[in-house]
Amino acid sequence: MTFIRRPLGMLARGFLRLFPRERAAAALGGLAAYYARALPPAEGLRFLFDLDRRVYRVEGRLAIQYGGGEHTKHRHLRYHDFFTERIQATDRVLDIGCGGGSLAHDVAAQTGATVYGIDINEKSIRAARHRYSHPGVTFIAGDALHELPEGEHFSVIILSNVLEHIDDRVGLLRSVVGRYQPERILIRVPAYDRDWRIPLQDELGSDYRLDPTHFIEFRQPVFREEMTAAGLVIDELIPVWGELWCRLHPVQAEQG
Image (tube, rainbow, N blue to C red; front, side, top):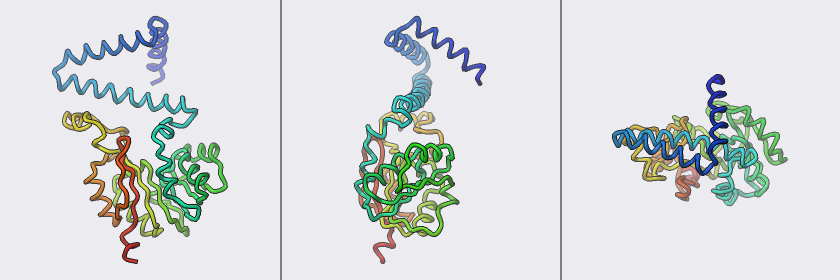
């Protein structure tokens, strides 16, 4: 695709020389609006939603660059606080799908807990080890569906923006709880009802997902059903920033 990207890059640089940012946005926005209005309403909406999805992905990449390698949503949403406020120094924490390691690091640094972060992406784990070295954190490259740490005990399990990437979510949760018998499970997932445009895109057959690897983006009733099926009890469920932040405990803990 390089032979396509280079001419497009040259075209973009030439466009920038001719049009300042405000004029470029007006010109491109006007062109998109003209094209969309020339189509039947449903097709015009599908075109705009497709364009919006592509722009959103570029915004994400640029937000990471602007944030010096970390997406600025970490500080805007302040979701790390949700996790650190529910973890104690005596806890042993397993952060499944830890990504670049910033949350695992903050949990260890701010609470004093011992944290293991596991992610299937080896590049992410190498970056985490380089950027977020901390005596209380161990980063592991591995598939959480098949390569969870053996012979360990964890009192807290973190799944931050992970479950939506898993097809058998109930199976994963049951496996993790059965293996480690945690006291608390802390979960963060994207919500389906975050914007009126989502059900409209769904109705039109457009891809409304925030990421093409998502199997699901949750309605609250579906989330509750899956947690019950996994043998978990919801202690807190906070809808915020178009997401669901949740603290749960296993049913067995009540029975024990």
